Image (cartoon, rainbow, N blue to C red; front, side, top):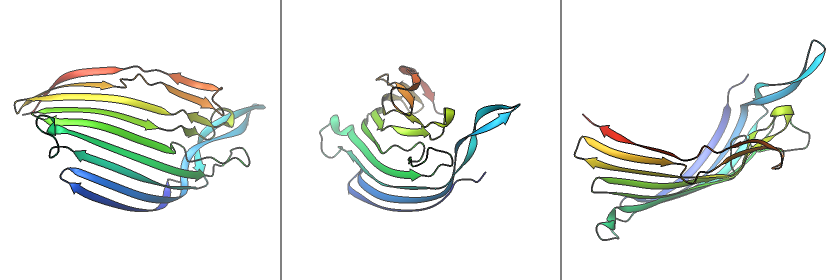
Length: 216
């Protein structure tokens, strides 16, 4: 089995328009010669035919797109105590076209694991020993496996998650913190071929943790 092999090019620009502030953009292109995927083939064992899925190689893929980002700290814009506020965002657009070895004829798929659209929105506060962060991340639906059970494609539905974190430095050696993961209790939905053919449906719920960090 061949490893991932690719030729790629990327062009980007960054503009630091204020202290602790940034605008950035980039375009990229990747020509993937080989990649690892799952391959489903019929195999006969003791005169019985089975559909067997094992790791194998795809026949190449093309990936192209762009990403933009923005970050700004408002320490020079807002009066105290609000001058510790800031925002950070990013957006990514990706197109891909991959050739798999045993998919349905005349059907094209993107590269596994790549969403066409994804973005993140972050608000933060850092001052007086306080560090607070609220982050929402989203990704569009994507191909999870091109040749899954019975050789059929499987998709992961669009997913958005909200996370929060808060910490406070108690002197120079101690930090108390609390984290909340998946605060919006987002659900994971995986389907085969079409959305009415559910393969997996998961709801992990919210996860909250707290503790103390000690620095020596």
